[in-house]
Image (cartoon, rainbow, N blue to C red; front, side, top):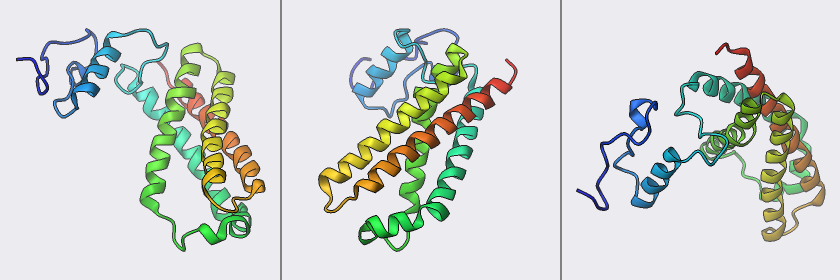
Length: 188
């Protein structure tokens, strides 16, 4: 049976763990098609990561990156930059942060750091690639946030933009390098 709800039971690629040999039935049709193409394709130099035999390295890299970024960002947001944000954007801030939104941000941001900085560096066996790719990923993500705020919010201060860009570049570079180092410390 082929169609919108049909899922092939035939393995798409040998050697993958059994849970990812077929597309989950709950994925919409377009996502299933992209999923199948991704499993068949070796066009991208780095695989998605968690569906590979080296899953333990990926998890370790993710956790080390998360630890570095969360510790540094906690220090930054909770101690070092409190006055910067209160004076610059205090009129826009909530009394209490939305921790669910913050958690979602960190989950996706650290996943992006793993995919775009740590995994390519592991494939190239090059820690400086993790550092540089992490810095670039951080710069572009934070730049997107800052310039979107400048474009859409009244009185978004330029000093917050510049300091946040430098901070995002720094912590993502450190997090990517920590993730790379943790994964490399694990034996194959």
